[in-house]
Length: 386
Image (cartoon, rainbow, N blue to C red; front, side, top):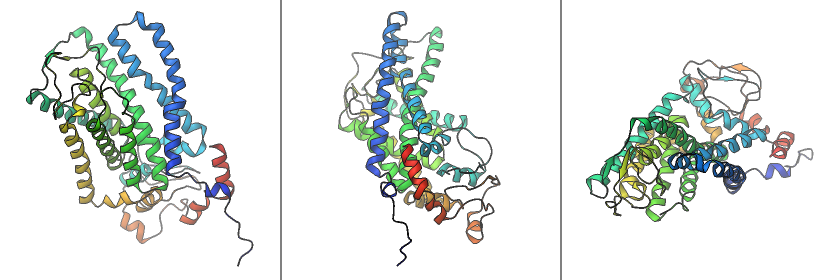
């Protein structure tokens, strides 16, 4: 027996597990950010009498979540091990260009495969369109079923307000996506198969809404299904921007275009208004929670997830759901960490050819070296910083 073999250090055995990742995510998201929200509430109280009720609603409910994005930024940059997560949110034109010490993400694999980054306004636009169409489907069902009646009530002078509201809704929706389909998704996918990241995202996303007005079994189940589908969309598209877009499109459509409750919260101003004496609660529409409390919402969001799984089965990507981040990168001919500066050819990668011969980039380390990167002094340094 080799007596010189170094025993595993305590920090090596205390690698982040599922419960710890969830605890850190919720702790920062719900408690640390709460101090920022207290400061924001003080600001809102100081301007309450000088802005319209509609503007106050938008600032108080939607714009306030800029605090959550700032908190996430601090979390990603304060602790070294989280910094790779932030870059998966950003726009970067062209193919990948890896530098020394880079920790690669799942998105790097897609960038290497397709020769370009997928984050950007195009993905955001597709998401906005998907959000509008899926929400409008639910509203159309409620209209046809006779549960609601809508009245047009909008002046041209309100257009700047609605554009500003769209921007604020994007902030709020993006904050939730960056925390759930960004930070928590990446940290879970680092150690666990992708399906674990998808499942945990869906469940926690639903539970985050249990204190909303009118929250009940069907609305929460519907939001859980939404969280599952949005996580699958983020994975399949290779971009969190499409998830940010679909979330924004959904919330803005029901809250500001049609004046319906957004998870129980109703806007003070909208293009269409709901007749106060016409709303009712049925299997299609919930008078308090809105279309998110009806069966059509469960159906359309579930259909989105099923469609993504079908497409993944059709093109052979379904196996990625059983892989963690390291195995996903390996499937695309990459490893987890880069040891020296070495730009990668942005041309599409032939995975079969990569498996048949040595990768063209010798700067990418082996599995053993990648594993060793998280042990001994490196592991101690990283987790000390956390």
